[in-house]
Image 1 (tube, rainbow, N blue to C red):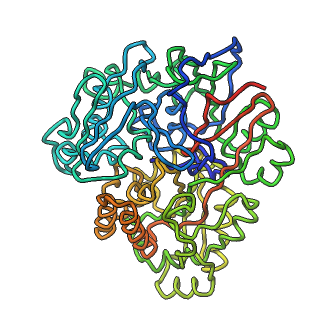
Image 2 (image 1 turned 120 degrees about the vertical axis):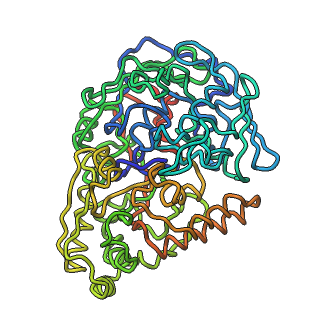
Image 3 (image 1 turned 180 degrees about the horizontal axis):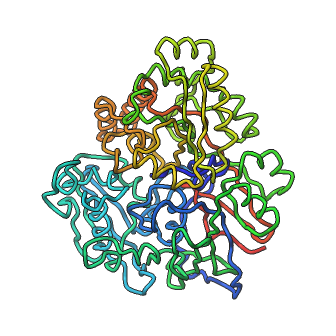
Length: 546
């Protein structure tokens, strides 16, 4: 799901934080918690500008997802064993991993007071899947029976508007039939794309309402205080929804996402107590953050991966795998993680992060620094004399991207031009439109804790244009191998196939893994008990005022 904004020495837009703490907003067993107190001073969190309006099914990046996670409550969250735990769902059951029954937990209402029903989930998922709607998350519904009817592919016309695999049994029950068994389906359901939508989200023309995208009605802990005018507003203001059935924060009711174009500016505001949470600390801050913040600086494991992306589908210069291997071997990951990131990141040696089952230390031989072999291989394959390297300037990436650029200049003997995009949305839009054809900085924060999530959403053929496959990589053997893992009923057998698919990526290098994230974040003197969950999102109900 989530391409991430930050170099994320922290996590949120950055790559997915594996928080050791259990993740849920605690809808079960906490319904009588009071919002507590009359403190209208908001808790303020740093955010980059969301790429799009606030539609759950059209949000596959970290900034918009952070806001939506406050407005919606997912069907499942994840415990400290990375297992899915029912949240807005009362139960999720199956006998064969193909037909799933989802029963909703009672007590949830939309922020306008109307009850949440199973039909609201079917509406959202069908809308996301329908090809005509061009939702960026449509790929995630590709396993539902009937997806090919509503999303037949480029140049083809849908023969249906709803997937036959979705059946509303009653107001509280949704039956989902997949086109093949998929043992990870329940695990997927904590992702943003699987949030519900109320009827008013879709206009009379059958399209998503812009009014809704600016002022979304959710069923989560917070509600919007006013519409968000993208490109104009510098903050998104929310307040606690009194009828939320789960745990609510004690002593405060207002939340504000402050939009920054500079991670350094946000860092200065945090030090001055003009910002309460910064989860994308710039590399320049890491070395001194512990001294300056003390116990308010946190460093924890993270499940994210930082890459150099490659535009395989629209730049013929990079279609030779040996050239990509040469670039990879020219990058000094150890020095970059130790020096630029002050040890806050670790060198990547696989496409699967070690926080998730399936990682194999040292499996990426092309990730070993070998400048002599890199230059030899690059020259033997007539590598380009000039390389463009793009990155978003609002996520603390300049230093490590410049370090990579210096590696390539020195070790490959090429000219490297770095190109900053002011905002994360800018580089994503340029990649979507195939307007930027250079190498590019990319990061991945997991949508759900499965090795499969490092594979299909980023590199599957089906995720081109409908997921996060910005490079356009397509390999039939890779797709088929992942599918075998999806359909395996034995988790060990499934993992074997996922690792075989990982081996194909290690050979092809559609992206170049550079580092594994660690979660590094800080908070002000005004709040306490800040936790970031598995999806790099703050557990707001636990935060207290100091």
